[in-house]
Length: 612
Image (cartoon, rainbow, N blue to C red; front, side, top):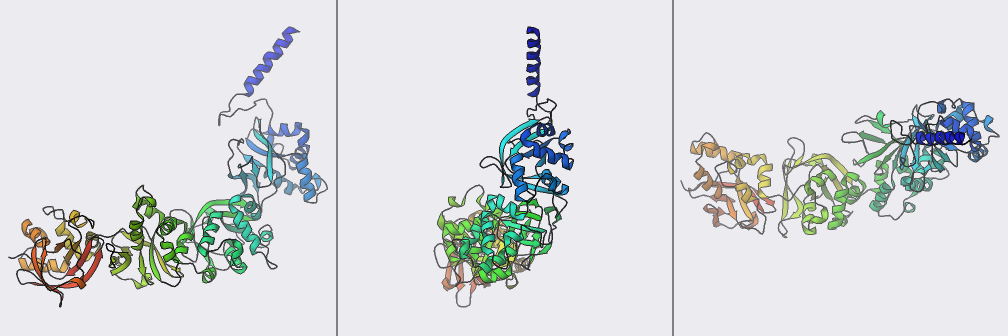
């Protein structure tokens, strides 16, 4: 008898030891006792309804094999409630194909213990009616484990040889679009909007729960997207939005009669929405939707598959032209509604310029840098690291008074709202439309002509920093010979000197900048073949004559008489805007007041020479 007890104890210890061994894949403990998921269900009286359902659908063999699964297992009470809620007298009244679909919606491929589950979407083995794709399950682990917002795990991590079982307190019904909207708390404002927009003519919850006009493709704005919309509109809640407007906006987020998954999208593809207007898909740099505002909304979660359609989460509420005509967002509103302009929106708030650009009684043109543009500009710093006064000037350097569409702009200088050294002199902006649309030679327009209630926005790929006199010399191809002369290896560090900030000697500067034609004429006049032929000392003396140090002399400040430059005296005639050098040669000032942050540039048509 003692030997029998000893043998039994040894066998028991060996069984325990074996059951704690690890599998080859995930290293999780498996029983390895020969019992499968199907065995557990069949041997547990509380799951007799589930066992009968598996037998009726032929799925017992599936869960009795070697393939690993995760099963959310409803008990008998859960099945009784399911039958009662759906008008079935007993399990045999449920059509086999319906029961099969429901059961497969409780099964996920692979082993997912409770510790491995996180809030998000996974796919079941069930396939819906709208597409040959597996249905999605929303797992919420914020408080326990809840599936699709209705079924709670009551006992987790029942490990079997071929997977894991999580006992749940209700049958997980086949999800529709409404199911997934209700399940995910990130869509709670969307659900509120669907309810608020419903009237006697249309019930959005019922529509998106059923099959009429299905399948649906729904682009679902997150709570943050709706919150941004309310801020832009200056409203406190959805109740403040007119119901007609809310219906227009919601309809614009639905494509009826199509189950459009992410893999079905192509760059530049358009689709007609339930509202009647088109949206456009832009797949460059990530999937985006372009609405009537022209500003992109990022698709941040894709392919939430339901029985009657598919849901994609987006980070900006889409607006059709019909809604824009009603809402008519300001430039500030567009920035706040566009995720890729969120840093600009923050900068507007920090500087107080959000109020300026929200003024519906004024008109502006704004070159709006993207978040990536700001990231490059900040170079690891934050907006709060920049003094507010300096940040204000940088932002103002992106704004023009009045409305200027891309077709209105030509290669030329204009003035921004930024100013020189706390004066009323606005900084200049050099626009080059020869090849694309560039600003000060550093920032390119990537999306033009986005309409706002008080102007137009052009999205740009780089922050337009406050320009120096060098900025304009480099940006404007008219001055390429001047730049070549300034940067000749045998010359002083002119570019370094001419980028000196105001407050540091010898800034500010007044620069008389000869055009390329002026340099060409000089070479002919002096008998040289190229700039390289001009002796170094002569070139230095010549260039110095074109710069007045420690003075920002605009055209209206010019006075007739001698003026001292870095290279000596020149004579200015303010009346006819000319400069006479020591040789009696006359240069005409042909462009005036190109205002930089550290000085001003005037273009001239003849190079000023020292006494020959």
